Image 1 (tube, rainbow, N blue to C red):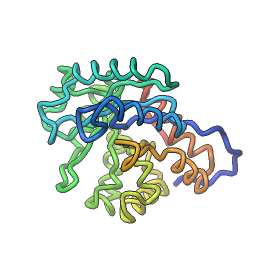
Image 2 (image 1 turned 120 degrees about the vertical axis):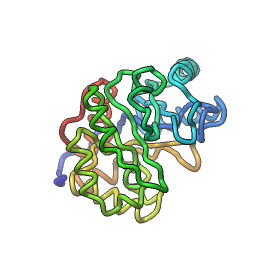
Image 3 (image 1 turned 60 degrees about the horizontal axis):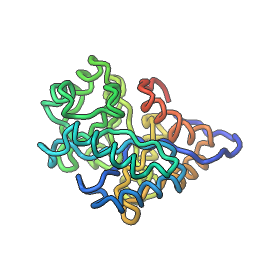
Image 4 (image 1 turned 180 degrees about the vertical axis):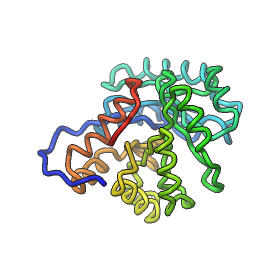
Length: 253
């Protein structure tokens, strides 16, 4: 269980490993102007580095392959070069039986294309057990980052499943907006319970735009600091995400 701390406030900063930042590729920004507005919002929200993670597989099967995402990230990074924001490639990947092969072929992207971390998303409406995929990816040296488990109602009371994923090498990522109740009270309660039970290893924005799905990292940091102290907030919003961008597995939190 995360224990409260009484440390002093520190300068807000964050690394965001889950953000739908690229223009015109999924349900995020529809054009470059919207992407740049979201880049600015991330900077204003204390984010120093971000992984652009468009959807892959599932409803986006045969779209957004690895080379396309890498090219789009290069273009956006060039357009946003006036901002103090590091942008790396990645993907929000829907679970799929072809996943190991597609990662090996470079069609499905890991974070920063480093083949050490992969964001894995489950369907919202139907539970598909990811445990075998988590184990297989771990055997390949890839740590699975399970995205927003708190927003799946079928996981709301499933500590046993979550512990099995973690034991197999996965890390759980909760959404900043979930901590603030922006995805409903069930998701909010689940997110805080995962934190209280020591199950969640990092927080990310899963931002899509500057209006409906904005980053919310500063407010999440304040909420975490109030509950557990600034050291824990910094760990979940900066230190552990930074390890992912550096290609290092998150072992403890």
